[in-house]
Length: 91
Image 1 (tube, helix red, strand yellow):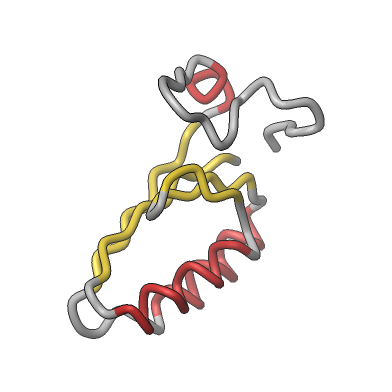
Image 2: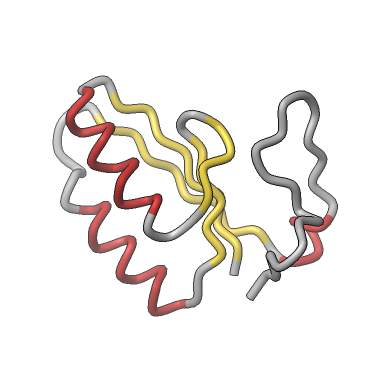
């Protein structure tokens, strides 16, 4: 399933750690927004890793997005990823 993950983290070190974790699960579409097309086991693994950073001034939001809704997404401006990208199929 597709998940949109956003974060707002003041500390550079913590922000970079979160970013590296997310790069292992998805595609960065904006500076602090990732699209992660992951199955249930991968989601649980990601959630466990992110939970370790739940201390301090960290705000991470995860939005599940169904295949139908994701296919209706619209990008405006400089698009780093587009839903119609060949080879990118939603689980």
